[in-house]
Length: 251
Image 1 (cartoon, rainbow, N blue to C red):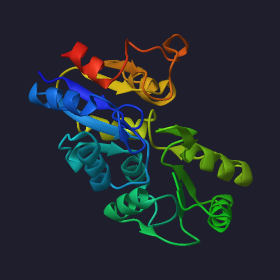
Image 2 (image 1 turned 90 degrees about the vertical axis):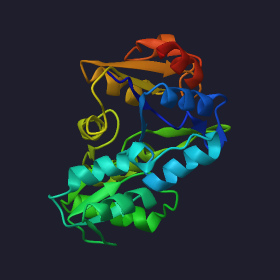
Image 3 (image 1 turned 180 degrees about the vertical axis):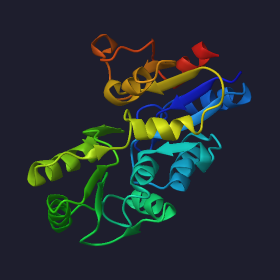
């Protein structure tokens, strides 16, 4: 029987471009102990290769792209077979995954709109996205996190961009990432028989992800968006100061 560790990244393994102390050694320890490590991120701006490379460069753990479960892939899986073309308000991660699943990215007039974190957002691209959604195209979002943690605070996340589109077009998007079913489907494809622990810093995504599955448990770490565990909703099964302490306890 294998312990499955579903590990969030931003606020757990690193913050922005800074590693969280002890996270690399903890991941290596879990790997040596035979754990099945899966990295689950709602940040759709990077490809799987880029995410694995960031883990390797920042914390020294030799992550493989196949270990990455991202909201970009969850969105592409959700859209596959229902639309041949899509407008994208998002980064390279979404473009890459939609291509992998055979969906052509177009500048305007697509059968679908997919919204994610878009570091290159402009008003003109926002306008086009609103027009596509208002015109009745299938409307998806990689995730709806309002912020994500960086070294010195928090930056607007995909949910902030999504809110602008939803308000302007008068529709709500289908959301693919944590804690929603499309992401859980993607994660289930990467799990092995055995207990499942979700380690994260955000109650509304990481803890809610675990709470939605009857046999999954959660660990809240205090290196990201949450500093007061007593206010966490849903509540975690365990609270740890950081990833290193969480893995030491679970193993």
